[in-house]
Structure formats: structure tokens, C-alpha cells
Length: 251
Picture (cartoon, rainbow, N blue to C red):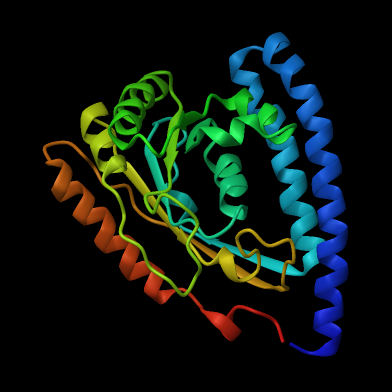
């Protein structure tokens, strides 16, 4: 990266970090009141004001372009099990905006984070204890079906944790199990956001993010293993096509 590019990265990341902190505190303070006062259907749109603000400031201040392919595959009138690879925080925000209303499967510790966790509670996440795998899976199935019956999509990151763009990890079968159990389709999504917004790092990098939203994968008449394999094959193939490294970052 050039000196000018590196300077922009540091300045943009600093401004974004300040905005992120202030915005999260403000919405975190307001979230408990919104949860009590607002009807359920209004809570996600309110929280998405926060999400859209973060995404906008990130794009502008950090010099990031976003390309989203496959928007035509989104049908908000039909809840789905939404699956995506997990590289950063960016996809957790953008998928809530694109697929609202959506409940995210996440580790329960996040709900205890001051301000941030208070905002998460607004949108009925499925908070699991990852150390209790059997109970966590039962919880995903039972609460996931409740959310889907209520008209909310369920977002699952089948890798289970953030994975660097140059690494791979097996996908768990939780998404396929929920989809077959609830009789709803899977909507797969892949992206390469980890290059510009690396996981667990405050510094952001100018570049481009590509998101590919796949065609829905119907669950009707399929066994869990077959549905999982179909999802896995599509996601692996599309992830291999995404720009990588210097093809993503602006020099």
C-alpha cells in the first residue's frame, strides 16, 4: 500500500472508530426504551438506522466500494435460513439491512456487552452457549422455528466463528437442520469483506467488497445431509471466485 493509501487507512479507521463508539453508545442507551415502547415490527427498522449509519461512514471514511450481486434472489415475503461465510463484523450489519426482519444466531456473551448487547436484544437474536453443542443445536432448532413462523429470517454463520479470508473451515449442519425441520429454504451468501474490515482489528483498509447472494435452495423433500451438501458446494465454489488480496485492496 502506498504512503497516501496507508495514511488514509489510519485516518479513516480512526474517524470510523469514534463514530462506531458514539453511535453504539447512543443506540445502546435508547434500545431498552425502544424495546419496551415500540411494536415488535418497528424494532428492526429502528436498529437498522444504526446499521446503515455504520455502513455509510465505513464506505465513505475508509474508502470502500461495495458490489452486491444477486439482489433479485431476496424475497422478504418469505422467511429463509440465511447462511453466510463469516470474516468480519461488516456482514452482520449489511445482512440485517438487506434481509430485515432477521434474527441472528450468536454467542450469548455478546448480549452482555454494554450498549452493543442492549441493541442486539431489540431484534430477538438466538443467543447460544457454544460450549454446550447439543443444547445449542436444540435451541437453534426450537427458537429458529419460532422466528421463522413469526415471519423473520434466521441468519446463521455455519463456520461458527470468524475465519480469515485466506483460511477455510468446515460448515456445520445447523442451518440445514433448521431449514429441513422448519420446511423453509436456505439462502446462501458469500463475500470477501475480511480484506477491508478484518475481524478483531480496529484498522480498516480501502478497497472493494463483493457480495454474492445465491439462488434459494429449497429444503422440501431433502434430507439434512443432502441440503447441507448442496449449500456447501455452492458456497465453496462462489467463495473461490471472489477477488482476493491485492485484487481487493486499493494500492
